[in-house]
Length: 284
Image: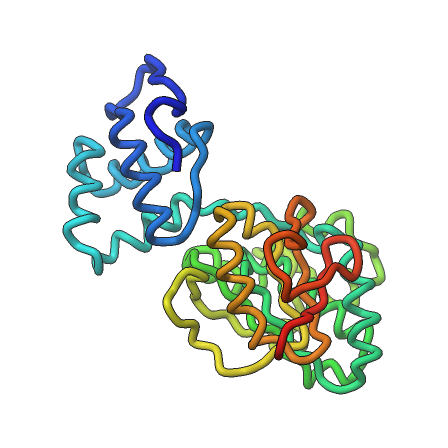
């Protein structure tokens, strides 16, 4: 955690609310304790912008009273909005595309139904990309596959469940794939697409905090997608999460990471198999 000495200095900006160094420090500590997210000093303006919306919505006059409320009421519903506001949800269909041929090949060699956990589902593009890949690889057998899609942000999960997207989100997708797996909106729904029911039905959405003491998961998975999540956690937190993944992966199971994430020196339970793809080497 950064100290006041290496935090970004206060910048005199014409703002609706005063946002002091002490306020920013409190926010960083609170979001780290609640969700494990490590906010760098360069995130100060983002934090102000997003939390100022919460102050306006609640009619608060200052950050101090808002943060006091959260600290005094650990079970308050506002905690959900606080976490949602500070969560980054950059995503796209078939993002980091090199992973999906590897998943397809793995599924074909696995033979039977494949179970996948996508632990940063965001607005659904990633879990639906996973489901589409399984459908392409396995054909009719894919209906027996399952994708558990979780996220700490309840707002994005609600959007993901609709399976509806602006058409521009799939504008770069191959025409054959688009026609096979999406329905084009007409009339009042023009300009939108919907994931076909047979794909959407493969995905189950649940709210989950990776830092929670226990996860409501009893099944084991062939594959875990944990991409561009660990970059928000410090190294000890990353190591703890990786350790908890091990018993949830079946023998030979795969872990897909983000392009800027490297687990080789964090955990001995995973060995590098390809570009940001790891095979579980620990006991499953």
